[in-house]
Length: 345
Image (cartoon, rainbow, N blue to C red; front, side):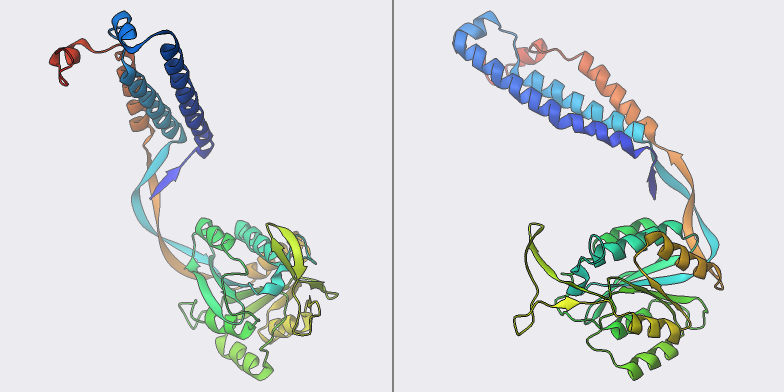
């Protein structure tokens, strides 16, 4: 396990491509001038000790110096002590609707982007809780199992999109059914599922859904995304709207927020329905509800002691600076005397 303390120093590495471009330009300019005023034999006679390869070597050393010094400034740390830590929290799985209707732009910038932003903001407010992610349309797939690693969770969250499931439509039942396997203890009282959707379910069967909710023992928070008035589903190319999704009759499809279904699901599980327009309000409501729930104690292994490693990279950088100071642009005489390529014959 490692940590990077001051990652903003990585921006200094942007100098490397600039140095390479300047070096290439200088070599081309140098070659042009030499060819313009001298032939090969004359230049060799006037500058017998001139070395073309040394400039490449010295530039390479400079690039390595910059790289090592930057890594030293970032200060990588390596974990040296692994301990088992007991924590208390709630297990919460986020089921994000990735059907095409989530592309509707009746909530800025669109429904799926809003869903991902809401989940990300909730991650920022969670403490010792564990999270998981599910993506669903007409079927549901696990994206991230229960974890305490919020940075990884955010990375997987950003990968969600409406093209990740080939089978379209929406089935909230599939998401609830899949979430049951995410919790490692069937008897725990803090099994929470947060569904973020526009509520349009093309495969809704009330009896089947209610029985699944009752059997799962999962508390469901449902977050409604979109407007009751509805909006068309844009079809874009290069972020430009080319047309809108149409039905078999050629009519533009209007997708609307179905609050009734989302409210029923929340009430059936003793959870809560939240309208998803206001990000801060949604985050506060979810966090407050989680605070009122029983906490589960679980163990996790984590590194509690880290050692700085910057000194190795700073040392290598300084060593290369010293090496660069003793390397000159002219040919090295003892290498020249070896006559490796029979240059003196």
